[in-house]
Image 1: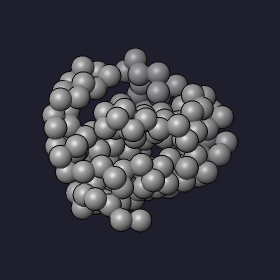
Image 2: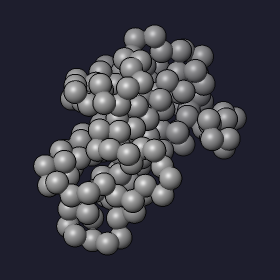
Image 3: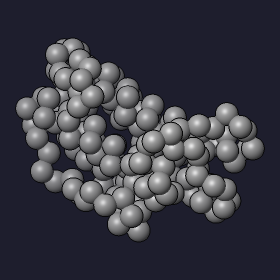
Image 4: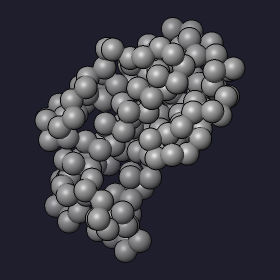
Length: 158
C-alpha cells in the first residue's frame, strides 16, 4: 500500500504504535487494580472501560473527520458508540480502525493535508496534518498518565 504523502505515512505509523502502546498500558493498569485517575468532571473517567473506549472511539473519530474534510467519507468502519461493548473486543476494534487509517489515507495528498481551513468539533481551525498529529498524541497522553499511576506518581491527573 503506497501512500501519496510520506508525512501521512509517518503519522499513521506513529498513531499505530501509540494506540497499541496505550492498550498495552491500559491492560497493565486494569490488572493493577489501581483506582481511576481523578475525573475533574470528565465522563471518560467513569470507568476503565469508558476511558479505553474513549481513546479508541477518538481514534475512529479523527479518521472519520479527515475523510469528511478531504471529501471521501468513510462507510466501512465500526460505528459502535458503546465503550463497554467496544472493550469486549478492543483488539479487534483497534485493528479495524488502524486498518481503516491505511485504507483511507493512502490517497490523501500533501495539498489536502496542509490546508488549515477545517473546523474541529471543539471549534479550532486545523489542517489534516494537525488533526493526525492530535490523533498520535491523544493515546500517548492517556498512556503516560496511566504509566505515571503505575509507577506511583502523584502527577497523574485527568
